[in-house]
Image (cartoon, rainbow, N blue to C red):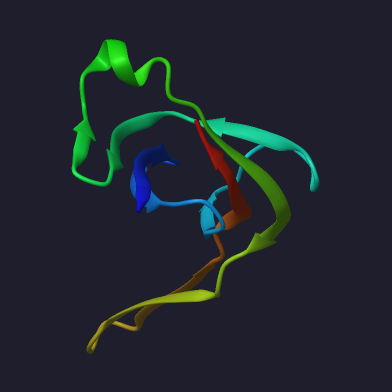
Length: 102
């Protein structure tokens, strides 16, 4: 089984061909392709982690859609002071499908 650890949006993700991964928003439209930088490549028993060998590895992914994450409600409250604050947040995300690891 071939899989790679890639850097994607400030995190590291384990991907193989055909996987769907949700990343932080990438500024491209649906249907276009992006390349993700590989940090580690595992091909059966062979593990590649050297920088010069990984520069030849390309992980290609196709952008499926741009979407927004779930609503996160932030509430702050201090008793007996009349202080309360409510704030919401939704993260901007991109869903991609890994098409090849070469």
